[in-house]
Length: 232
Image 1: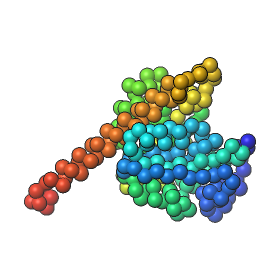
Image 2: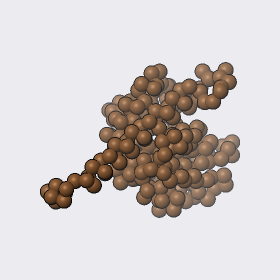
Image 3: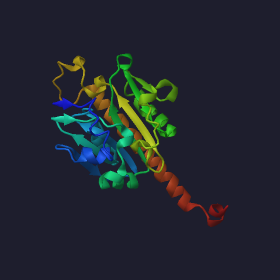
Image 4: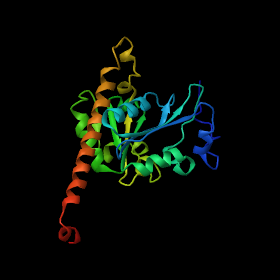
């Protein structure tokens, strides 16, 4: 297993994402559902468990999901803005389909071991997701104000895939503990996922269901407006 943190082979390529997709063991996953999307483009063995969180939340909410999975032998951590949809018809199809997205990431920081960070440019969606997580994750700080989040984890780059859908999206950064990748879970034998992991998935799914219901109701309401109202 090799994590190529300092190897610039891919970063120095003209099209880093295309180079990544050509590497052995790298695969893409796409499932189209509602206009709400989940992503895990640092998935597989890179930021472990993020793809499970994204796909499970999508399954429970009827949302769409895209993941880029890296295998056990080599992992390349490309910056998010390098994931160019021009290099992937699969990613392009996903982004064209969804209106908003939650991109799931993993991070590790001794200062933020119990923090869940909600970055990205759609701040209304970030606050909405926070509402659905706070009650379900009492052991964590749900940080959804940009001034609380380290700039390197705030997901503000305009080419970050979480900001590319029509209405933008959220980048959620998750510490190891909530992904079940902490020594505190060493003795856990199930059944199922560790409790924090499970609660996170249900919170994200609830956020997606509520957002979709609200958006569908707004569309239905606009469709019923009299022509004079629509014309102003």
